[in-house]
Amino acid sequence: MKNIISRDNPTYKQLKKLGESARERRKSGRALLDGVHLIETFLATGRQPELLVVSETGLGHPECALLLKSVPTSLVVVVPDVLFKELSPVETPVGLLAEIAIPSPAIPENPQFCVLLDDLQDPGNVGTIIRTAAAAGCDALFLSPGCADAWSPRVLRAGMGGHFALTICESADLVAIAKNFSGKIYAMEAAAARGLYQNQLNGQLGFAIGNEGAGLSDALMQACEVIAIPMPGKMESLNAATAAAVCLFEAVRQREGG
Image (tube, rainbow, N blue to C red):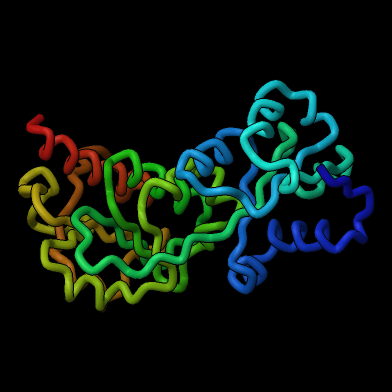
């Protein structure tokens, strides 16, 4: 194990940048995972972190100590609690961070069950949809260039490990994907004549989820089949992540014969 005791340490400075800057994450192809659960989920894929950062207090934490045994000591650095807290995106960190290489997959040629996110800017929504898509068994998730950074600390926390259960493609041309899709891509519009539950959602399928305020772009809307989520109550719309969950798990229900 190595020790870092100064904010001027080059490794520490780089870790700080990764936690704070989407530009740095894109430039370096690296991201930070915070906490035991996310790191365990990453390790379960068979990959190793570039670096494992543990606080002095974290060394004595039972879950951290157990996880540290699963990686080579040459990958571990120890930092004082006060410096670790400046790196961690959470208020009360458990004391463990991992620097990882961001996967850079090719766009899947024939996804079977996917989600398209069009300029979603709230990290909590993006992360929750990633988590929901992974839980529903989606194989791919595409984000337009205007979406929140999929590998930011807030999105990763909301994703709860879903990032490692499906293919995530950022800066994707959603209109081209929708036009070339062999199955059906559904877009939600409250005024649509046909409702979600009236559609057969088996087979090759995708859902397009739009920006929290503006919705989907006109071009993407035109490339999709438009349906409505029935809302008999006195509300005009649903939160983007909630709408995604309703659609994805209606598809799951139908696919499982429910």
